[in-house]
Length: 554
Image (cartoon, rainbow, N blue to C red; front, top):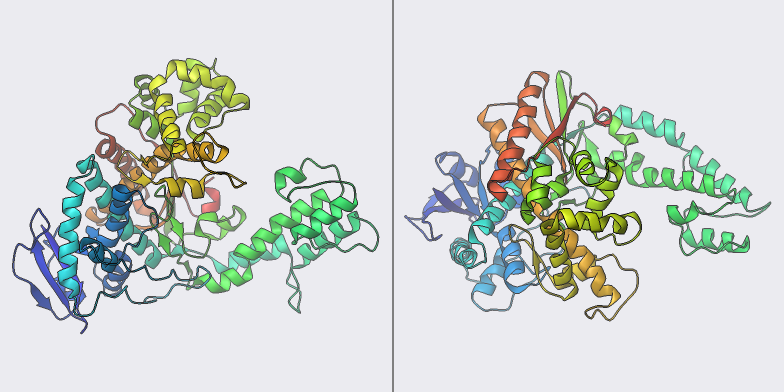
């Protein structure tokens, strides 16, 4: 049973049941509050609403937990990309309603600046035209989306993707509310030890000042070089007779000069100081929790991003500050060789599926079969096929990989060819990479004309080669999250999902629940594999660690 629900201007809510075509299947009901409307109907299997990020925040604040939802705005983003091959199109309810009626489509509201701490209510939704009833618009848009989904190439896969994306929205909202357990005292001790004490007057920490002085001295007496300014560094090396095109780590490591070692050390500390230093700690960690604002589907591949806080780039040294509450623990789970396993499942290559269905270490098994037992060679070859590495060792071993696993290599080759030709490329579920998106995100450093066979086209091809695998993996992980969330709720656990990054998930739970959570993760992974890819021999194992401190998990 599905019900649509929308807020009214007076703080209340309007709602009604829906039939399988997304149309009203009963009378419209009015309730005094959104929370009461949802709380009083536990029999509803899925709530259809405008935006999870806005509506579910309010429900959680009122103590109302929702098992399943359908996020109209998230669905619109996926459907418009699938249908029209256009990335970055407006996704709001107002935009979807205008699109349905062939009216001018209003732009989405500007994104909140990533540097600011999120608040409960940042801004209202994009307004509908005057006189347009929001609940009526919601019903019309949802029914239209149901019809549009049925017309996609693989409707069942698209329905699963829409459900998974909506589930991800629920998880993201809950994780932002729960927060990552964070020890401020440990974080400060780490900063003091690594960066040195702060110097009054707004200067950088002591150790960074020392390294900056060491860099300057390496270029000669009386020379002053700012190591945080790339142009300063490039000019200083030029005066020393060394030409640099950038100050990237790999380029600096090729140079024999006394300034290199302190400069690399400075750059490492500078990243820590600016991204997760004292200012970050004061801005983002409150009451023992770091609460990032997750953005599901923030990239074209479906991988998540965050709006500020750098939650997906936490340095290893800072992970020591992520510690469970007393009596609790962190269950940290990493998907093992996720993308190669997904490639096996979506390509239906018999040989690669067999490898992905055997031991825990897919690369080791592959090495025994095709690379004389050399695991490193097997890994280079398989990742080279996925990421489009066409030189060095990857090229050397590609012929063997192609001979043994032709369907798998052909799958990514076809995706690369489609990208080069500017065609649409889709994940197994139907998430779409448009030509514009692949051009924007492809790994190119110069401007090209962009025609077929040009360097920029080949760059698009390298991106779409990986997109079909990485995107399908991102879609699969959404199903894992949904299954894990459901299992923990069904078991009545106090455990809470607190972190998710690509192929890693962290659950914060009482120590007594750790074994149950670990088992639930394994079950969710295998169930997601069957739901996503049907019956295959491919296994999707996780490596799980039960720790008090995140830094001890790896």
